[in-house]
Image (cartoon, rainbow, N blue to C red; front, side, top):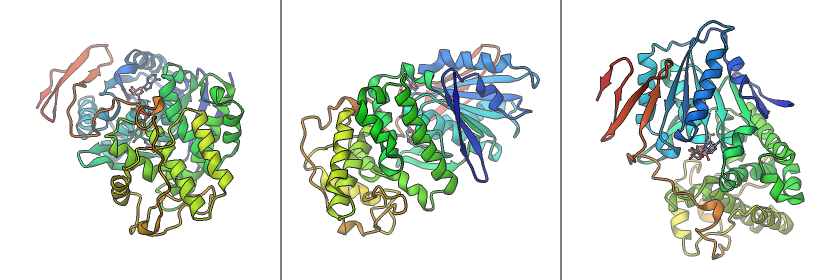
Length: 415
Ligand SMILES: NC(=O)c1ccc[n+]([C@@H]2O[C@H](COP(=O)([O-])OP(=O)(O)OC[C@H]3O[C@@H](n4cnc5c(N)ncnc54)[C@H](O)[C@@H]3O)[C@@H](O)[C@H]2O)c1
């Protein structure tokens, strides 16, 4: 089966391998001399993570390895500093050195957390990202943004830390629910609006095949989206300029996620945000009526939401003004256009007019918008942490208050 490699260039260059059945490339992606590997994964992928561990152990070309599995709580519950501390603890007890590695195997929440752990352990160890969701593949695992949530908000603590490789195995996506895949695909459509119009043609030709992870159309669209992100982050790793175009639709999208207490999928929220941005641009005379309407028809053809509760605007505007991407009161990304060279109009927020937000029966019940996701941080939840040592013995971890309790295979126990 063919594979595609997309390169991120710059000081921290790396390749993104895309294909089917390419999981065995994870081992080769690790630098020579890696002796210990921490595979961070969500509970949903526990069995598959064990298989990945076995593959890594089977490759002895570079000498024997120790592979540890760190199962972390699902989704945003895994993106907490306590979870990072759990991983540091596992690595410390296993004597991870600077030449060892972390593998993030999961959706964007896992790759963000794994990246943060890799960035911070001994001030930075090797990281290989193995995304297993559409959003993770086209967005979170590419570009080197890592982080955790805090009680004050999402992604407020983090680091830029580039992976040494990203292995995107499209077969890994087969187990995603259609809603999950479609919501993640919103980021692919975003790439179509801001950079690669061929993606829009693919969706318009057959929206069902476009979001079907097994089709060639899906693969082509995903590769175009990754190619865009790779080019953008190669040019602007630390989001000092061009990278801001990736925030298209995100200022309102983040406000909706916040208003919905993160029960909406990210892609569903930015779908509404992208149409908002298009309407705003149209009203500002920066986008044609046809281009704005194309946003609506494409997003709706995928079953993504394009409207939000009427009456929510004051609350959304207040959140948008606090958005970390707004600067000096400017809306930041709200009114991006399809132009690559003009990420933002830099108008003060007060001069951004609100486009009409239609009331819709699909307001909060849209399939791709539904999510039973807990609070971003500061809420313990039931999810536990589990570490499986290389000999297959499990170390059990019990949460008590906000702490993490580890009863390790080596007999360690910490409050
Ligand atoms: N670092 C970045 O640049 C960046 C960019 C965009 C988003 N993000 C972050 O990504 C996160 C969202 O990522 P996400 O949408 O992948 O959500 P997620 O990581 O929460 O995964 C969604 C769900 O899918 C499950 N899952 C993962 N892979 C699966 C598979 N192959 N089959 C079945 N189920 C699977 C997970 O267990 C989880 O329940 C957010 O925390 C967001 O902040 C980061």
